[in-house]
Image (cartoon, rainbow, N blue to C red; front, side):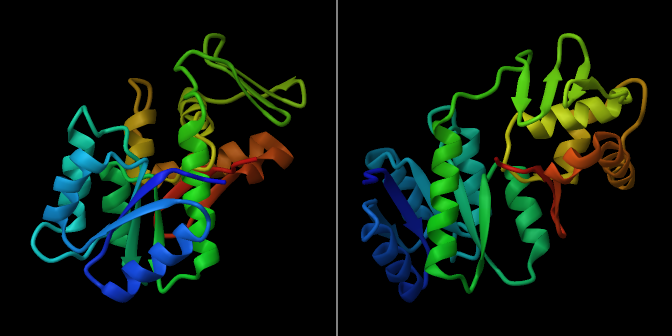
Length: 229
């Protein structure tokens, strides 16, 4: 049974109680607040393992709460799941670029909520893959030191930019990255990566990876992720 502490931040009482009920009945310890100011105060004393954060809050909004959490060395590790209105893709992109781990679009089902919470906590519990460590996922091996990629034991010839993109995504399976985050990670002296060229590189990368190319998934309106296996 889960015992992780979760802070829920939403100014709508119905949403807070819906989230609280479904998390508590699945074994989580839950604290709820209705504003960004309260959230920042409570985080210091409650020390949650996860924050479920509505973006559209009165006063200090969810973006500023996220920015504050992620800019403080004492709380930057704290995972955040954003609650966002349907169709507000720009909000999702902004939140992810501020450091949030995932998002849920309103209205949402309890099953989706629980699945996202469990997935984020599971990912956070894992040891992070070190920058130079070899990554092995199913039949894919990424060797940073050798700049080598193997698919089913056979080498795949990638450009430097394609390699950097694959390595960046594969280090954190299941995490969603915006195009801008991928640009920042993949930019090199050999090629000026742009927003549009990311899509071109992804298409080429998938093609070269063959059947494993489907593991590089498109998150519509946001960016890309490497499928969690």
